[in-house]
Each structure stands twice: as C-alpha cells, then as structure tokens.
Length: 148
Image (cartoon, rainbow, N blue to C red; front, side, top):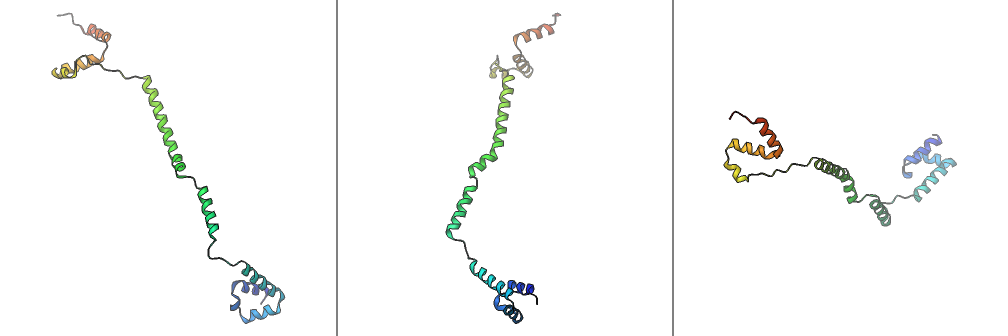
C-alpha cells in the first residue's frame, strides 16, 4: 500500500478498526506516523459539543430579533399602496364633484300633493320642476297653439 492509501484509511476509519497491515505501515513510515498524530491532536482539540452555550444562544436570539422588522412596520408597508390609491380616488372625486355640482331640486308642490295628481300630471309636474322659469316660458311659447 502507498502512503496515500494509508492516509485515506487513517482519515476514514477509527484507530481501533485499522487493519494490521495499515498499523505495520504506520510503525515503519515516519510521514504516516506524523499524519496520524496530527490528526489525533486536531480531533482532541476540536471536540464537537452537544449544544452551544446559553450566552451564545441568547446573543443569536437578540440579533435575530433586532434584524427582523417589527409587525407594525410590516403592516404599514403592505397598506401604503392601498392608502395612496384611496387618497387619490378621494381627491379625484372631490375635483369632479366640485366642477359639476348637482342641481338641487326644490319641488314647488309638496310630495303629498303630487301623489294626489294622476300619473300624467305627476310626470308633467316633475318635468316642469326641473326647468327654470325662462325654460318654461320658452317651452310655452314654442308649443302654444293659437287656434283656441
């Protein structure tokens, strides 16, 4: 076996499970002996621990909480486009409604009196109430029949 094969065996197997052939090579070869000693020293120095220390866990938790955005900021970021749209629509409606004011209808006949009229007169009354006096006069002049 070559030294490369022996070093691979040392890396892959526990020292107690090495074959007698590998152990004999290690006793003869100073390079493989040094490799095995260095490996065992490094394994001894870097023993894995079961769990990290409590201080380390607390530090990690603190850092994680610090880096996570707060819940209220997260909600604000999601609602910001919706609020901007609502504000834009409100402003647009305000502009449209102030440029085109609705006509206020002031009925000349109270509602109860309109109900007493027959259907054709109710329609005529509603139509006449929507016109100004000048429009009514013009309509009268245009439809006046002299033949009476």
